[in-house]
Image (cartoon, rainbow, N blue to C red; front, side):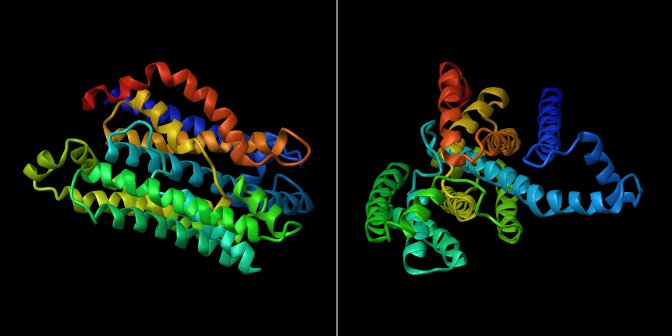
Length: 341
């Protein structure tokens, strides 16, 4: 218990520090003293800076940096916790949020919206709808046959992935090569450059609610990892609860695509890292994944903003950073699964 408190204290401290640094970093320089002064000014009304400077900082913080920081934290948390949940359900370390066609379906939906609609709201709505539709297809296919439900779900996910990836390529083929195609490619490479504060705050509510529900249901996830017979002996309907976890994970993963495009590797690497640090108990693993995913994506987003004069797509950087991290933890990746075996 003491080790867990220390772990969460360290992770929360790192997250707070990362948020503080993220507020200071950017094309418009802000000193740590000004951040503290502005915070004191907003919370207590203390006049420690002139009105013009306070108004400028409010624009920088409230309308530009805070929505982006909030978005990066929630997307990182959602992808990491979804990956941890799906890895536990399938008892497979190679599982990520894309296993059931979620990301392929959301990519097709976004591309469909770009090609056939001029509204970014429709692009985001289509991303969520088709992400969920891809999961529905995978689940529906798995129920057509008798056999190992986990294996059938994986096979259904492969079929769903293949279908929606093909449809996504069709949308790229049909897109206007001068306007629509660049928009599809750039947005799906991931990033918050095209995301406004209103969209961030609107989508943050269901993402945060989905994460909170998964955290509250983590004891049931522990039971599911024991197998269907053990779950049944404890009075838990494994089939029903498995669908609950899959639907919630699919929903928040689809919402991340609607918010910032495709962000890879977070849902695969972060759960592995947290499993090594925190162990396989999902009551500890899931909140650790939430905090670590937030920290990782927030740091990566800072790099994407500052690495080059033009903003680097976030999905490219998560892959470039995720691959060496995964290679480093690969040697010890099996330790986090030892208690399940």
